[in-house]
Image (cartoon, rainbow, N blue to C red; front, side, top):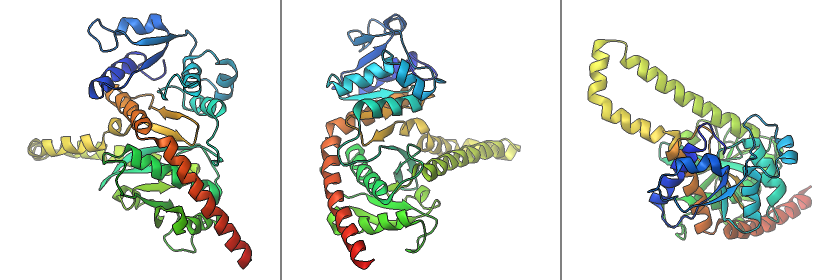
Length: 344
């Protein structure tokens, strides 16, 4: 029931997801009286299970209030279904803050993980890059950053187009104010030392700057939520600015309009690559369950992509892999702490 164009965009997006992957079995949670009219007789959702409730979390609800008063809301009931094993994942386009706090309170974090992190993909010169945290944690310790790296590594591999069982290890960079080893806060430098330990078994690249990740220097960028959110929003704003300036330039003169006619296909390809609907589906990593947040303005294509992210994570055993990775990281963290104690 969440999102700018719910429930129609959600229903159409779910139909699209099923057409691309018939193995998906959706459960729609919300007001059946508002959902059924959008399901046509020939729809793949004609026999779908609907978990009925008339309660919902509004987009402007304060998360803490939604947690207290929204126990029968569609969002809360969907999360409860994951906790109870009735569903393998929850996908929502609703209130972001409410989804995060409800999911955290109901599902709790995986053993060994202190805080969950919000992760998402965005386009780069060489494909796509995963970035986390995008706003769930304002301040982070070295341990938090290492845990984010482990979760990002697993998330990237299980949602990659390539075979997730392949030996490819995605490269991981720590977002910093410079590439030099002495740059950045103590927590970032300590995290770098831990990630460099072979025991952690990850492809750590080193420090990266804000100008590096759009160029595809690394596959995964790890950051605290404050810096990560600003970096992502800046990249999104710059992308919109460039698009606007290009459109204005091609409308400026007759010759510019003629030039656009010859280059129109190239610009269509560019728009498709930069289309945010292709990358829709931020994930709250680190919980005892798969939680995917679709953008509220997502169209059916975008919502279908969010469902695909959730399906890929479940199908490729994300939860099992991240638990193994966390176990390795805890050993590396203990070794780094012992070394630090010896030198201090």
